[in-house]
Image (tube, rainbow, N blue to C red):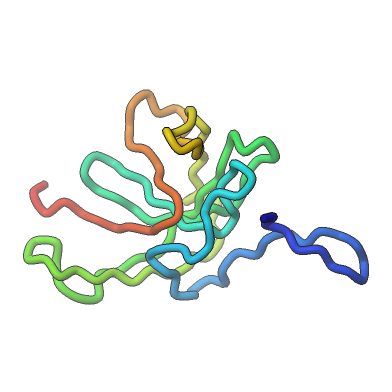
Amino acid sequence: MSTTKTNKTKGKAKAPSLPAPGTILPERDAEPWCVDGKPRVGAGASAGYGSDSYPYTVVAVSPSGHKVTLQGDHYRVTKGSFETGGVEVEYRAAEPDTRDLRVVTRRGYDKDGNPRYAFVGSKRGGGVGFGFRRFYSDPHF
């Protein structure tokens, strides 16, 4: 399964499109996040920092799949709280903003053969999960 579509009239591949700014995004992706061993452009991602998590969207993938560029998504709690539970969070596509781009690099593969990624320059730091968006703010800090 390829992430590009072929325009039959011109024979050129069309790049995958990103959601328009302001579009409500799903918490879990309906499509597979990993295609041909690389994250899919437009796939959701979540980055962990300590016990907190923040949502991202994949906006670029190098041809080798070694480097992936993430754009931060907007998020807001629409119901409940992290202290009392029952939290519902709404995710929206952000305006393209080069100040909020993060680059992650492949660090190996998991037991199922899926690539694992970490932030560039991170000696330890949190990892990145693909195929879902998650915002979580630990109420104990």
